[in-house]
Image 1 (spheres, rainbow, N blue to C red):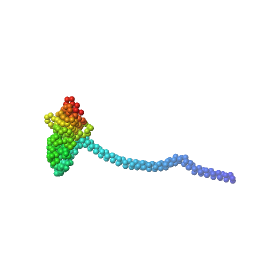
Image 2: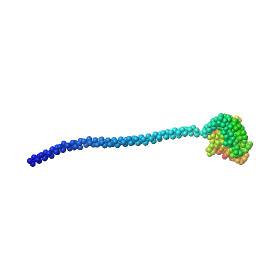
Image 3: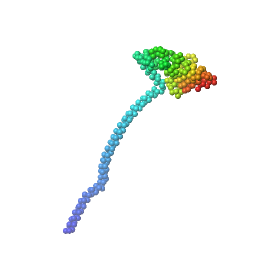
Image 4: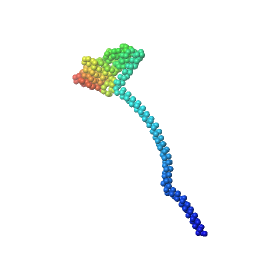
Length: 336
């Protein structure tokens, strides 16, 4: 009986063991063969979260740059384009206008003539700086205002010297407005007869003057446009004395007295640009900041010992066929 019980117990144990082997082998097989499968499943499960994690990262990365780059990029490209366009336009206009001061003044004068012409057509009367009415009744008056004129002030009164027909812009010929085919010389004659201007200066505005000037008033300053006085030559809009249309032996300016100053002129197409014959006195003559070109001779000084000295500074001499400076006095050291 004991043996039978033992056998029975043993059989039960064996049976349980067998049953357990049937159950656990599956787990063991799952542990053995499934590990790759389970690991792959785990990997797949981890891949899913990774894709889920990368998915938000990708949109976040794409959205953030797209928004941040697009918004600054668009304004950045738009603003420079507009600024560059305007800058280019401004620079172009500046380049086209600024190369030459004379071109600017020509444009201003043309515009002034147009304005004056319109005023004349509409019977408009303007007042000058001295309070005198400007009667703009003719186109010639407009052209006169556009071209400028020699002028000076004496006793606080402004005197103008204009080409023929020019005073029509100022109410006609009067005690303060003179007409002449040689307006600069007319101003010089007035000064000779009536005395020096308040500041000794006769001003000549830009334009071309076919004249031969003779200065016979001591201490007179004849002023054109010297520009920068430390730069040689006349200014860009300096008045031009031109002897091209004159006949005979021509001289641009003849200085007959002491203490005269000539500054800011272009003097061209004369046999002699400036002549200084024998002059008596002790006040120095100054010739400065002029452009003397295309003449026979430039400056011809025929003085003698004891005559006033002559200072010749910051002048430009171009294409004169003879001499630029002639110091004709014997043993004369007065030219500097």
